[in-house]
Length: 61
Image (cartoon, rainbow, N blue to C red; front, top):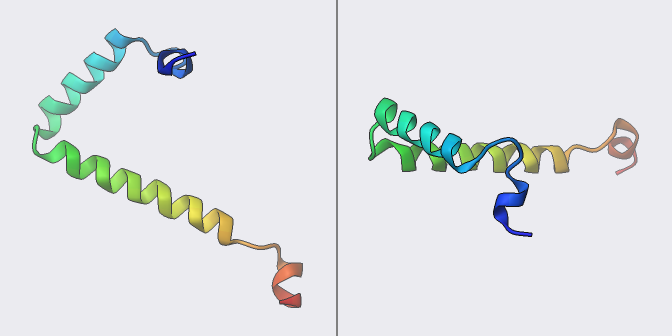
């Protein structure tokens, strides 16, 4: 199974339309900055979820 099998309801045409709209809205230079910020936000969210412990474990530690 390749990458395309995991894309769900989105096909190549839909992704191209989304990409074109993003380039028109933000400009070509701004998209890498937006992607970097989005990636950092997701990474921070995941680490925050992993670091949370239930209240009982916090009291014992």
